[in-house]
Image (cartoon, rainbow over all chains, first blue to last red; front, side, top):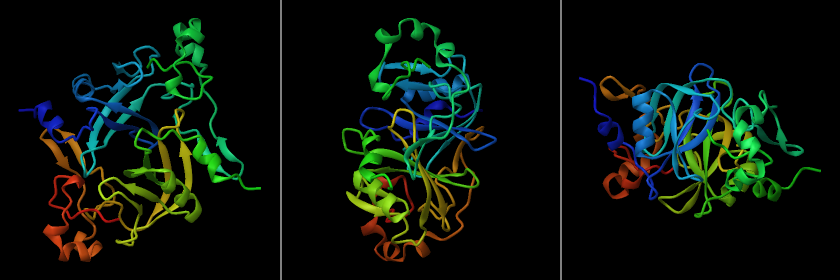
Length: 154
Length: 154
């Protein structure tokens, strides 16, 4: 009999907001794609649907990665660290993980000249989020970063 | 002129507790070693000393990784994600990263039989933390996880 998802949840230590950080890593290359947050429902949905689902702190909603952009993360395996307070998702990323159109979110490196952009977008964010582009200024969610990128709908 | 560390700090979004999660990744293999937390001082110390330094939430002190165990993380490069709220440390890990004596902390995988241990310790934790072993029960810090491992002094 398959173990129940309640058993998976019982080992995870959610913080005072009911959240746990989750790292998405491309399962075959080891590339760290992004970090987001999960609540219990996000963990459950990820395990049931076998695709990464997070909790959007800025929107206060469940966020099926790729629901807007089509850039899904198919789940390969979920792992948990020794303290139970960080989740690692080994995934197969469709397209790009970052809402800026880059393959991964960690594209700033601290080098001799300060923060240096080390990767370029592969896709125009307007193409990933056509609706956000239409509403551009109105839809901008400054809690998502310094911009000028659109809000991150998924 | 080398950029100032204040400039590095200015781009990082620390949370309401003044902390930011930091992933340590082995720079050449892509292995995710561990996740810990950094405050401003930990970021500054990491960049100045070129070795990973974290903030221990359980002990409320700066925590130079390896200061007790000798299992240092030499800094290869610091990166920052699009939102500025997660730090990635590319490091060269001496020995093991996990206080259980395993190479990395993500040794539990959710599989058909539930949470499955997928890596064994390479070093006896008693060897990593001889003092903690002496004080064993008294020193145990339950905030560090389900045990039976010793508290995590570094």
